[in-house]
Image 1 (tube, rainbow, N blue to C red):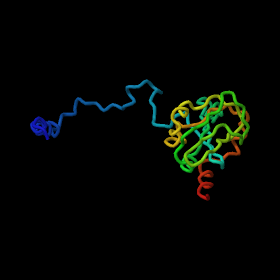
Image 2 (image 1 turned 180 degrees about the horizontal axis):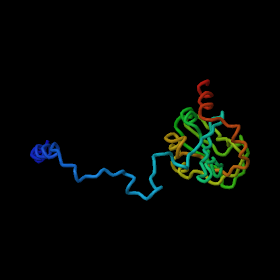
Image 3 (image 1 turned 180 degrees about the vertical axis):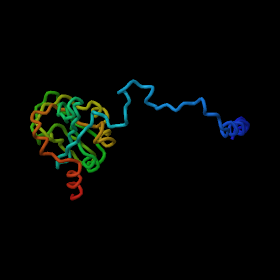
Image 4 (image 1 turned 45 degrees about the horizontal axis):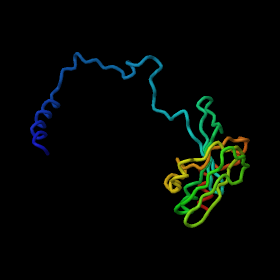
Length: 180
């Protein structure tokens, strides 16, 4: 402990232990300083995300549209699951789809190559590719670090939203990988 801290400590302890008169102090609600209706409680973001999975270890992430509270397939992202990334091992190359590529559900939207093997990334739903993840062009290994996060493969415009109903939720997907 420094010399300054040792000399200030007894003084600070005495000051903090004194009882101060509270007659002039008024208790005020924290909300009193805010205009009516502007007090925010802790809650989740209105822009929640939902992931759906395929049995072939791809995911599609839908975002809440922020207006109706519905999960809208406006431009969901597609990627491979953590299970797939671990199974592949160290990724060395990611083939990204071309912009405006039309794909059907179950068709390749890209490919991932590792030191062990190569695997196609299949689109969970039909749609048109809006963009590929440019980060993966320069840093393919990023897919090992964040396979279900920022290392998505493609962003697509969904043609038929009803196809999403046939995909697995997180619990059902976990059951399929537990069986393997």
